[in-house]
Amino acid sequence: MHILLFGGTSEGRELAEWLAGEGVGVTLCVATGYGASLIPSDPRIRVHTGRLDRSGMEGLMREGRFERVVDATHPYAVEVTRNLRTAAENAGLPYQRLLRDGAVEGDWICVSDLAGAAERLTAVEGGILLTTGSKELAPFAVPGLRERCFLRVLPSLDSLGRCLELGFSPAHVLCMQGPFSKELNLAIIRQYGIGALVTKASGGAGGFWDKEEAAREAGCALVVVERPCQETGRSLEELKTDFKEALR
Image 1 (spheres, rainbow, N blue to C red):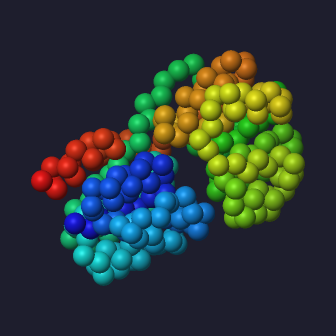
Image 2 (cartoon, rainbow, N blue to C red):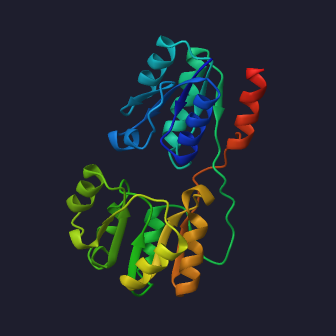
């Protein structure tokens, strides 16, 4: 059996390692060299690095002898998931979506997108800790808001470059690789005088609850960007069960 697995998420890496341990060959597709560097060396895991459009995905699916496609991309990567579904259908391969747990409810500020978060933050005092990645920072790169933002992004040249191109101060860019404990989040909030922490509803695997607990203990506002859509799919444990049955 050989699986085509898309996604550099923690769940995707865990599934790839688990499949390799079960003797299954995996081609794991990640967007960046940094994502590839996080994948442990294993003879059963082949890493494909680089972003693919729909035709590129379909071409890869057709050239390999894959039994199925697993989509473990980030829950906010809506277009990537849409392209993967279509490419798998066109290539005649079964498609499965690995869903990250993400049911989050509580007393915080909910917004539909990052532009909405930026708008709400004009009324919040203190520093702003952005933990939503480096790709969608433009709404915060405006006078009066940009100076207050501290950006926690992945330690890659691409991430740092995007921050600096938008005019954020190098002293406000925190290049770090997670996971981040509640204690570390709390230390950052206190160190930089953070009055609001911005996060996506990324669930436990994305460190949401550690951020939520730290913000609550520090008396810091929590701004949550809701997921763009409701998806159907399988949890990591459910997918492992599916594969166990298929390997019998």
